[in-house]
Image (cartoon, rainbow, N blue to C red; front, top):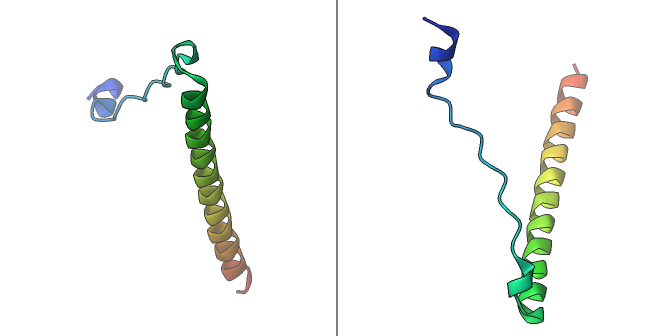
Length: 65
């Protein structure tokens, strides 16, 4: 079995999405787009905080021994 054969089933990396064309959007549309992005940033920050809390709890659990 060749090395490359082992990786055939792996999903390809997703391409980075192209930035939106803001020149075709009105001010209200751009403001709504910004609000959507800010909500996604807040969601990502909450996920990071949750993962950090899980990691801290696990580290504290295993340090007690």
